Every structure is written in C-alpha cells, then in structure tokens.
Length: 286
Image (cartoon, rainbow, N blue to C red; front, side):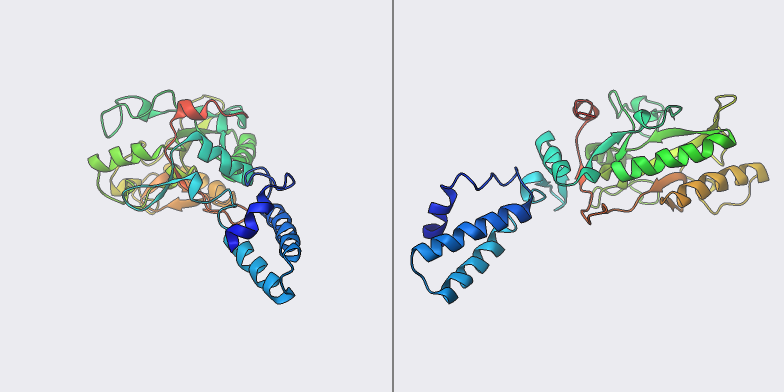
C-alpha cells in the first residue's frame, strides 16, 4: 500500500532530492502530496491521517543527510567517515562540522609536525604534507585564544590537531596505553578534529616557552598535576591551561599539551571519527 501511494508522489517535480533541501522542508512537501494522493483515492480521513503519519516517520530517517549513507561502520562498530562525499554531505547540513585550517585563522601560528618526520615515538613517518585542522567551533575558539595571548607576548605552537583514524591505529600498535594513546576501539578526539596538542612560544624570540617536558613524553612529569618543577615552568603550564579552559577546551590529565573541545555542535550534531588524509582536505573550498 505504501508503494502504491508513494509512486505517484515521487513523480511530482516539486519534491526535491533528499540532499537538496532541509529534512523538515522535504517532509512537509512529501506530506502535502501524500495527503492529496490519499484524497484522490477517496480514502477515509482517519485512514489518510494514519498512512501519512506512518510514512512521515519512515521518511524522517533516510532523508536526513547525517545518516548511515555518510559514514562506514568499521570492524569495531564505530561510525567512520572515509570519503570526501560523506564529509561534504555532513557539512552541508551543519557548517560546524567543517574542518578549518588553523593557519588561515591565526596569522602568527607556528607548527612542529613531528609525525611528519621519524622524530616521534613510532620512529616512522605518519603524516604526508600535514596541515593543522580543527572543527569550526574549536578553530574559532582557538583563534580567540591566540588573540588574547598576543598582547601578553605569546603565540601558539601546534604539534598536532586533526589526525586521520588510520594513524591512531598505527600509534596504538606502538604504545597500547590509553593514558598516552587512543585505543582504536574508541577512537580519538584528534580523529574527530576537536583535540589539539599545543604549547606557547615567545613572539619576541620565536622560541618555544619552557614546559615540563618535550611533546609526547610518556612519563608522570608530563601530567598536569606534576609539581616537582621550577616555578617558572609551572607558571607557563598554568598559563596555557588557563587560556585553553577559558576558551572552552578541557585538559587531559596525563599530557600538559593536550586539550579537547566539546563533542557536539551548537545544533547537537556529534563529530564523527574521520579517516581523510591531508591531501584530501587540502582540496576543500575555504
């Protein structure tokens, strides 16, 4: 019966493709034509309302751009965006889901991509032609933090931001310790584009500000609460933490450099794990 009613409805040119309009608009138009179809077949009012309600409930899921068509399910049962079209579909629905390059927002940004070299804990090159990306709300929040630090003589030094999921898998093979690496069974905030590894540098000298450890130091000395340090270094760590928290980021207790932004957009959409490489992202329109 549903197919019988839907067939004449989808012949009508007024009904857009599911990805061309907002779901609410599509459903409203579909409901209108279903109602007209039901009346054309001289069904009773009660029957028509029942059929309309059932079909609208059915349509509400497949017509939504943020559905299973935009991601794959991996071996751990995680929702993972692996292709450019799935990513584009999602950001058309909610612009907050877009990954934004930080160097286009923060002119004095410095980067030190150790994962693009062998000088990292895996001793292998993990990144090809990297660029620092965060989701739009996190990127704009970090831009504001940089603006607030600038008058104090500090700039931001980025070690890592968005990280493709396959890199997280490789890291876990080397350090299977969830204090310092993300378990692929859950994924990382980096894979979602909402976590950033960073420090401060002096705008005057261009040199990194002294911190408790080097980046990716997997000892208790790198923990946020570690106190057996010179006062000046504790103050530097506290300064970074203070501005990051005020900007909406949360610190990781075991890594002084790691901060994450909330995992939902202003519209309530979650950030899914992503496995797009940097070359793919460099082709997106800014």
